[in-house]
Amino acid sequence: MDRQERMIKVGIAEKNIVSQPYLIRTSGLGSCVGLVLYDEEKKTAGLVHIMLPDSSLSRTGEYSPCKYADTAVKDLAEKLAERGCRKGALKAKLAGGAQMFPFQPSGMLNIGARNVAAVLEQLDTMKIPVISMDTGGSSGRTIEFNPATGKLSIFTVNQSAKTI
Image 1 (cartoon, rainbow, N blue to C red):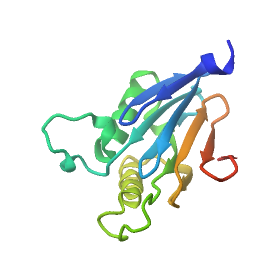
Image 2 (image 1 turned 45 degrees about the vertical axis):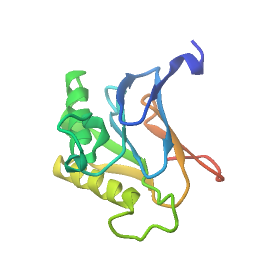
Image 3 (image 1 turned 30 degrees about the vertical axis):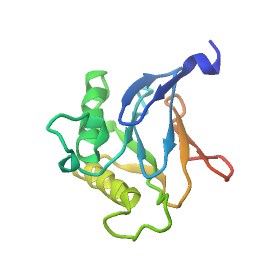
């Protein structure tokens, strides 16, 4: 099985879970946040592509829990527990949360910063430690996580790739 066959892709406002030897990837992280929760011992990880900070922003009563930070973090942790991961062993890595439009004021319209803050608040509430993160800036990102190594590769527009 080659690398492409092992790659599981996650779309906007979606989540998925993989175990080694599979890899998990999401693209198009501008103001969105890509959050990885993983259990090192189980070599299992989940990735969610979060669009907005708070489900109260929903214009309808029905929405995907993956779309909002206040529901996505808990939802992903629960799905990992269903797959045998230990909630107390989960660790987090995240990337994204850029301010994509420089003319935006830094307050309410800076969705990227608000997304990051909301994800960090949920992780703190759930007592999930953040191991590393690459957030902010003004460039889009693609991220790829390998549950076998616990490494998150980040591909940022107009920058060199890095691993955290």
